[in-house]
Length: 86
Image (cartoon, helix red, strand yellow):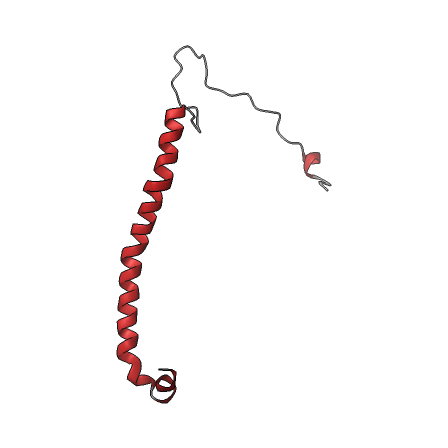
């Protein structure tokens, strides 16, 4: 095949077109299948496990007794904190 490609590259145009169609199909079909499988077999169980354990990344629960949802923060950085860091 290498010799044919060197001597008569136009003879392999059919193989080239066939291969591009096959790989386009593989990319169009397999990538969504693989990503869907990763989502359903990795991300979904992690989310369900976190829900069962009661862990939440964001505390979005409604608190009727709370006066405010404000969270106190540490004082903001001063300009001198960024000078001569190392």
